Figure 1 (cartoon, rainbow, N blue to C red):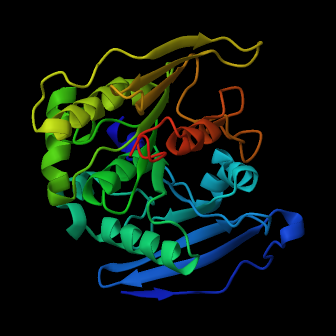
Figure 2: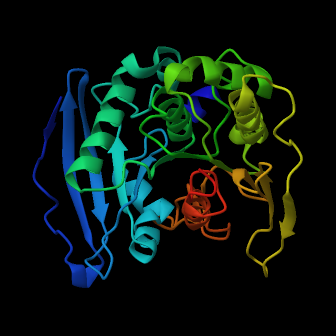
Figure 3: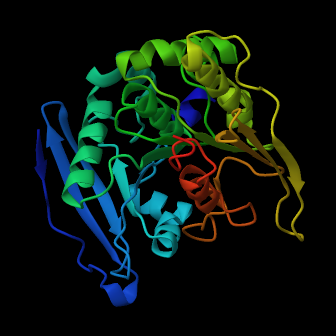
Length: 330
């Protein structure tokens, strides 16, 4: 089961044979990034020219064995970015580092900023932010399965680079079920604070998993948000003293018309009413992109009957009622 879960110079390379124009929904181009640690390829989506220039960036990390093209289609992040106007980067694990294209998030969680893949992804993120002229205060990282583990490692190692974290079908940072050391949410939170070091800051987290996903359920996906609430508590005054309420401020069961899947939606807020975490449990969903598009009729890695997590995730990060989403919630 664990293997299934695990299921500086910038070098610009040739774009895809077809680079989309503003008339056909933006550009989707192939690149690679190299620094002293190595090289990773990535795909970049920029929405079409419009009245407002995109300022925000979302870095999407594919699951084990998934290509950037696969993550693009299954997640629907390009469609969301076209509508809400932001840029998306899809780093892709190199077969030179992993024959199964699996992010080594366990090593990244232990090695932090010195880890090869983490260092390259962070450098790639900074490069895209600079060259596309995006706002470095609004850069978000998310992933699914092994990509979720890597996204968590990135947010913890580079909190100076990322402003928000998204987890799909993943586990808490340094969790024992994911080849880590922590067992409880409090232990995971302590590991987060230690690993963040002098760069530490509170970070809004969106977590989504399926109730029928044997991998996510088996690695304690339900502890992701509780662990980060403890991080928030530790960072506000240096103590885990209950200053962050562990009771959800919002808790609702959403029941769309069949055959769409129902889900539990919970939001946690601080004393000012600023959202710190959001959790979705989708009933009946297995190990898949929630609300995504399958690549073909046999693809079970995207669930179009589940709610649209990609749109909800981005709206959560950028809402004025979310931590760092506005001056009020800074």
